[in-house]
Every structure is written in C-alpha cells, then in structure tokens.
Image (cartoon, rainbow, N blue to C red; front, side, top):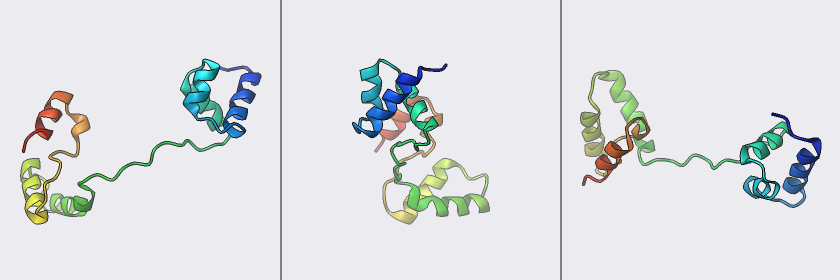
Length: 112
C-alpha cells in the first residue's frame, strides 16, 4: 500500500527535525507504526531495535556445543546437569523456551 508523498515528507520531517520516535509519529499522524518504519527504511535509515540481550547460558554455549558434537544423543536434562555441575551455578533450564507452550515454560522456570 502506498501513502501520499506529503505524509512521507511529514514522517521524515518529524523524525529528523523534531527527533520523534516511530510510535510518537504514528500516533500523531494516525498511521500504523510499521508504516512509519517502512517509510524510514525506504529513506535508507537503519531500524533501531533493541540490541539482543545476553542470556545466562551464553558463557556455556561452547561447552554445550562441544559436548553435543561428542554425544549427539545426549538428553537436555543430562546436559543441563553437566553444565550445572561444571559451573556450580543455577541456570535457566531450557534455552529453547520459545518452542514450548507458555504453560510448560512457566512451570519449568518456577522449579527450584
């Protein structure tokens, strides 16, 4: 869907001159925030998302990868126990929580 050239110019002016954020521009002009993001991207501006945060498991990923290369059929619970024993720290139980349903993820994260 195309938008009017005047609206594009207004979006770019509000972003560059007024230093407004995407959401503020979208609310003011009564357009969707993705429309504002698309106009800014077409103008050659990089998207400003939040940088990905480091997880608790990041320092242990090399150990996990090496162990899985040596023992590809190792279960997640055994691998978790090995990492926990090697580190002496409590870690999040499952890195791939996004693949599970929200109920089972919540149940796993509440265990002590």
